[in-house]
Image (cartoon, rainbow, N blue to C red; front, side, top):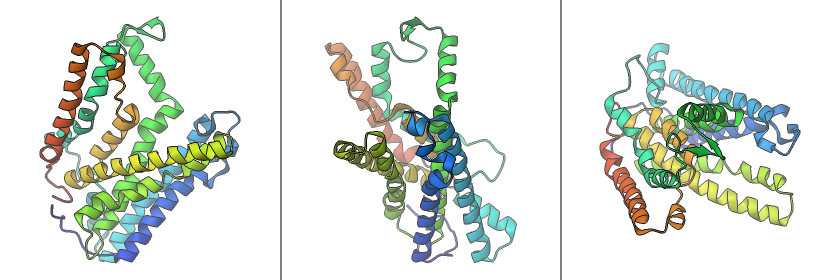
Length: 317
């Protein structure tokens, strides 16, 4: 892949310092205000306390927007270009739209990649009779389509739902994909493609380490709590770093922030791909259907990884 033509404005040291500032500002904002700290929780909900969730959403929203403004400042001051030209270049580097035209069909096609990975789990839910809009009951109650819509709205519209499925995906991708990769692309000599895809997501993975402290406190602050928090933190760091590599690939190939955000939302909805459906369905027909769904989803994902992400205006094509 080749990088789009952008001016080399930063040294590697300046770029790394920028990455550190962006990551620290995002994570630090979670604890900057008293209302966003765990000590503000009045019950066992901890970080899911609505007041803490609300305060933290405001904090990370401000941190991610300030980071994007910082990228604009770097381009404007270091390049010596006019404000309008700097604004357009910054928007391109950040994967933000520079016109009011709708997304291209090729860009929309890239949004299908991540759902393909969950084809198996989705079929498993259908076999369980627990797939939304196809299930007849939910928690013992009969469900109509209208009931399904209300349940989805209730879940996604709660404070925790807004955090998990809207604010966190947008602000994390703006900070750890747009802002960090923009600074990397402005570095001279330019970073290699491998580093942009596999190196920069390390900031995203390490940014989740702070959850270990919160889990340690929530689980009782003893030796067992420390072990559980460490194991959970290690898995989460590895998983988020792996996802960050995929999201960085999407961002660079498409030149848009939309595919990483959509993928982030999808992963937050489904979590880590679930293979337990094979243990719940023992008939050979069910297992054959599941195997085809899992294999077909992975094959479709691999087959579309390059073809479906070839978008005009990509940052690294």
